[in-house]
Length: 203
Image (cartoon, rainbow, N blue to C red; front, side):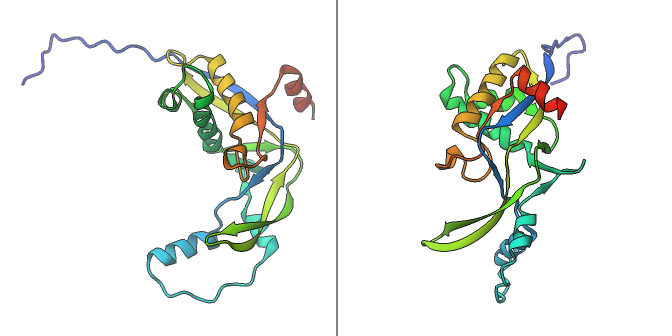
C-alpha cells in the first residue's frame, strides 16, 4: 500500500526530566563483583574443558576482585542494582507496576560512585550447593552514600513517585550481598534529606 503523502503523524512529546538523588546507607554495603577467575571457570565449564586442580585461595585477591573500581577513582556500585531494587519495591507501593517503573525512568552511567571510607575486607562462611561450605572474602563499605542521576518521563511518573519508590526500595529490598530481598540486613539505604546532603558536601 503506498504511503499517503498528505498524512500527518503527530507524536506526543516525551516530558523527560533529570534530577540528582543522593542515597545514604543505613547498613553496610557488601560488594561481590564477578571475578575474572569465576568467569573463566564458568566459560571453561560451558566449553566442556577438562577441569584443572583448584588454585589455592588468595583472600587478598578475592577481596580486591569483589570491588568495582570507578573510572573517576575510588569505588562504585552498578546503577542497575538501584533500579532493580526500585522495580522490586513496586509490590509495596500503590498504583505503580513493575512494567511502569521499568519504562518510566533510567539511571545514567554504569557505576554510581561510593562516597565514604575505603572498604574493609570481610570474611564470611557461606553455603554453596548441596550444603557445601566455603569462605568468601568481600569488600564492605560503611558508612556509605552515593549520587544517582535519574532521567524520567514525567508524563508517566512524577519525581516525587520515583523518590518515594527508591526510598521504599532502600528499606525493603536493598542492594549488594545479604540485602533484605535475600533475607539479609545489609545494603539498606534512604533518600538523603537536605541537611544530610549539606553535611556530605562539606566533607
